[in-house]
Structure formats: structure tokens, C-alpha cells
Image (cartoon, rainbow, N blue to C red; front, top):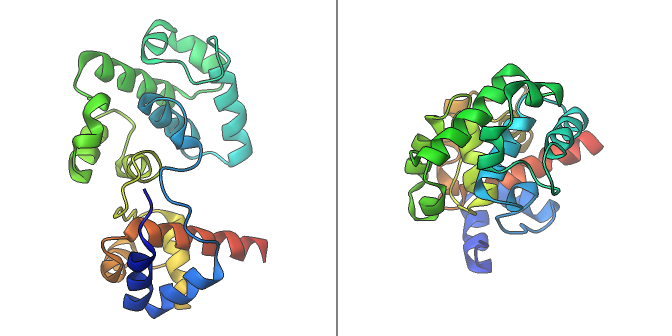
Length: 210
């Protein structure tokens, strides 16, 4: 989903600092986007689990090994995850915690308590509540799913380090603001907080490149 040019102009007008940043980074591409837009909903969430708390290169290597456990290029399906022994996941590089999380997600999908087929009809809060019931999945993973998979435009992952660093850069702060401060700062960005989040990520990227 992509907001209209009028909506983007209104966002920039409501927050001149963010508006200036929007002029300096690439145009918002629209969501869903990136690797989470590929495969099934289950596989998108499983990928987020695989990448938790790992540097990019290490995460890609381990994720690729798990994908190679079953035929095809994608992460194992719900049924395949339930059939694969825990030791097989561990041999591919998954930690015990990530193995448990993926297995619990697969079991809940099979049992129907995680209803991914109807997730597009749920509110943001309902999606977060449903996914957070899975062992090892927290609010951040659910928020990434909302933005990059479902294309929701008003998500604000205030606890994300990249978002906090982006706000620090945006406002010229010495320290990263706390999540509650980020949430308050983000009020003018409604109903396009996902767009603002994307801009904050780009500010971080540019700071690293600089």
C-alpha cells in the first residue's frame, strides 16, 4: 500500500523536520516490501524469527541452511516444520529458542489459534495480540509483519533501535530517546507512522554510509 502524494505532503507539513528528511531520502516505495513480502505469511514470520538478534550475514547463512532442509527455495511450510525434528533445526544453526518459536508458531497455525488466512481482516492490535501469544514472538516481530508483509501504514515500532536512532538523528539529540518519548514524538505522523518509520530507517542507513 502506498499513500497518495497529497497524504505525503500533509505528513511533511505536520512535521517540518520529518518533511525535510523526506526530501533527502529516496521516495517511499510503499508496503509490503522487502524479503517479508515473499512466500506465505507463515514463512514471512518465520524469517523474522530467524533474523532476531543476529547480524545480517550470519542470519542469512543460517536462514539459507534452514531453507535447504526441505525441497524448494523457501522456508519449510507449517507441515514440514512440524515433521522436522528439533535436532534438524539445531544442526542448521537455529538456537533452541528459535526452534521452539518456529515449532510453536507452526503448531498454533495447524491448530487454528493463529489464523493467518484471515489476518488481513484483523486490526493492527488484533494481529499483535495473536502473534504475541506465540512463544518467542514479541511486539516488534508482529509490527514488522504488519508493515512489511500486510502493508499497514500506521505502525510505530517505538522500541526499535533503528527507529530510536532515527529520531535522535532527526531531532539532533545526543542520546537515543526512550520508546515512550518516541511514541509521543510520533503523534504528528498519524496516520502514516509506517512511512515515518521507513524515513527514520533511511536516516540511519545514510549515517552509516557517511
